[in-house]
Length: 480
Image (cartoon, rainbow, N blue to C red):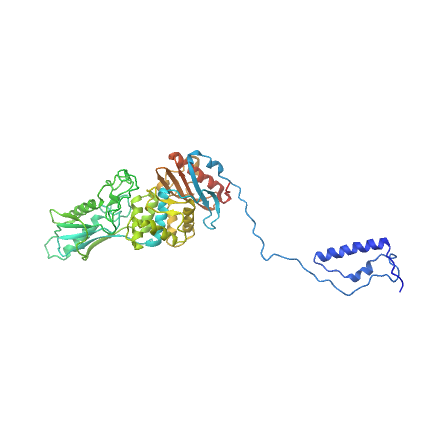
């Protein structure tokens, strides 16, 4: 066999180039017929007997590797509210902003820190009341008969909105039941059982306010002048007009014995309704016997009570609702039971028990503790829910429109009127605001902002300016 002869240099270079093209084609997922090389060799470069063989083999198409799912583009938010945070009036600030539907945290400053929420606590109480009691529940005040027709029992049902004003005369509580109506029904029922010509003569009213304990009616951690300043009444199961001296003034001074006042006012209503007794004795105590119901009146539904509590920041209604939550949970309606009952109820709607410490239902106590993150998570549940909690959002005050925000967000912050729904909070050393803001881009956000330390009206304005800055950023808010 003759020795193999080397290819000329030009031919070797040409074949090298062709080989490179083949490799490239294969890498790109194509195929290449090696037999075609013979037809591509330049004439005269290969001597006879040294032609490249032409195999009948095809290289398979390896194809490209494609991901099963395409990656989602990562949004980079670019709008900052750092400038608004420089305001020294914010004091010791903590807060958070979240997307209530995705749970994404857009902004956070010490958001896990426990701080006194002040009246932002009413968001928690309102949620608990709606979840446990339901929006349609009402509370009844009743009059029971006894074995002595001259003696009746007035039984408090935990309706602090019951009014001593004449039916049709508005108190601070719209749609409140009245003692006049209760007394007229009582007289009518009692009269129906008498012979013609005889008139009802009630000589004693036993006042029963034992639905929950009265000995813990005023929390030791509340300000001593809270009642005299009109902030709250003693938390009793029977009272009229929130025990205000003036039923038509929200911050009217509260009394020291709401049960006695209610009993005396019912006697006045009985006289006006036609009771013939010249003198009626009022006795405070338990019902001597459980007799038939002569008459009853009902409070507005829980949904309306929650709405008023939130809009006007009514502390008495908040405490009343909290006690009813305790009763419904079998905890007796005691003040002490709220510490475990309310966190347990809120846990039932999807929140952890961490991040909340409960002393009362109104937020008056500095011993209440909540983290901004906890409040924002609860607000997110409110936004996403379509059950009992759904009405809570519409109960929040609206900036520049109603409730405790009707005269807030002024000056340059007025741009967010109608765009902010939030609960205000104010106790010594704390200013707070938590709720929802619809951004300039129409995206809804939930926020909870707290300022502690030396705080005042300037702090309120500083918090409002921060909310306005969040509004401007909308869903483009960045945490830097």
